[in-house]
Length: 413
Image (cartoon, rainbow, N blue to C red; front, side, top):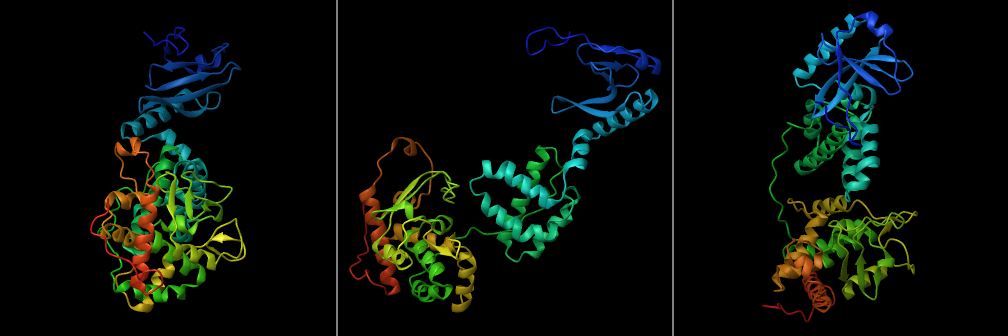
């Protein structure tokens, strides 16, 4: 008994019979499209449209849903050829293939550059808040090599070769992850049939725990300025506030009011603000030394990005590159990244006795739990004290002003 239609009306009985050529020529169209199934070849049907057009279809199931493979016009393809093609399609399906998806991929994959662009516009910008980071990796490491290649022609060998050309193991893993995300989406959209990144092992890496020691802080601080005024200022603010490098580089003057920097959780495309990484709005106190740093590059403007390079007012970039140059200049083999400056700040929070909860709170690091729902106290006074104390401690270590009266706290509730 056939299942009823979604609107509740009864479904028609399936029409099945052996389909000779003369039957196809004489079958009459009806007010609604219908199919007549061949009892000689499993999965073969003649689809008849209300306008009288007839076509051969090979029908099979994939994921519990029917897939209709168009064989050709019934007036041009005879029943013998239609059965032969349908038999081949059914054999492919039995081997785990998906002929409809393969045909769609053959027609619509295009170059990898086109596929990457479609992924960004149709998916990443809507679903992934940090899409710019992955897109930058794709543009730097993948497009120069894969950009003009047919997307469906890229193989595991190409992925392994790409990873072998990237010196930093962590970066190679990140690039592979970015590529895999593109191909995973493309498979779901039936643009390609396989993700070549699957089965390619990532590089072994160790969890990064790099923080600047008391003796390293003054050495780094002394050469920050070699990165240029704007980049130097941004790196110092990351170290003194513990905020994420991507959020510091996109700091807006409109978001700084009376010493408090408010970061909206959601992106603002008009302002070029990317939103916070965890999607939660965050309000952080800027210690006096940080406000002084910002004032030095203020220029009297009350709008726009705080840290800009060039004449267009774009947010500062290449902070990681600046840190690599700084490490090379002072001879540090264990390279330090901008995120390590944030980690150094966080370590100072707990070392001064404020505790892990305080550290997570001022750095907008969400650990989750029921407290996130019910604890709405904003701890502004406590947060302000933490930010001032940590910044003052760092400045005392680097030999700057404002640190002379700092006392190591054993316990602060």
